[in-house]
Image (cartoon, rainbow, N blue to C red; front, side, top):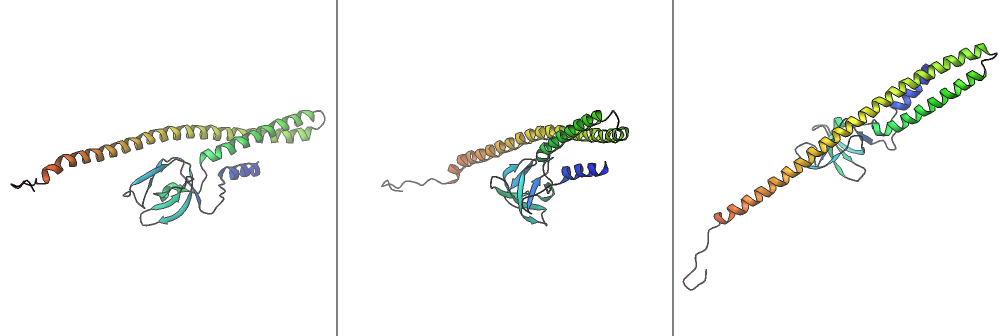
Length: 203
């Protein structure tokens, strides 16, 4: 039983990467992409929770890392939000597949136990023990699956809220620029002195 549980846990926690520098944005995060290695640089976009990125460099002084996303965009995010662990969106399908496999094994074990019930008492006891272990594993994975689905729903709700916040910031920034331009256009004519016309009509 311990060996089977260890195999399942290893498969759930493993995060294989095609390249050594592959990283993921933490699941519980919606982060902005900056043009430089700190929050003082302008925002050039955003990266969703769980997105796979390539780590290009890190700045230990500011705590920011330069990454490139799947669309080829390069920018800087806080290093603490860059992780080697695959996102829940990647792990969830694998978890569902393993759950299906355990259910199949459980069904097979029950059928085998029923067919041997007649004269193989010792074998039946072993099968019953195996069934109990599989049922426990099925229960554990079912709980993990339910927890993962709840977490994904919460992350999606948080992502929607933060996207609205980003859109509002863009509108406020655009409105500020437009207002400053209008104010400058109204003040500028009063700051430039008008030239007096000479008697012959030339300035």
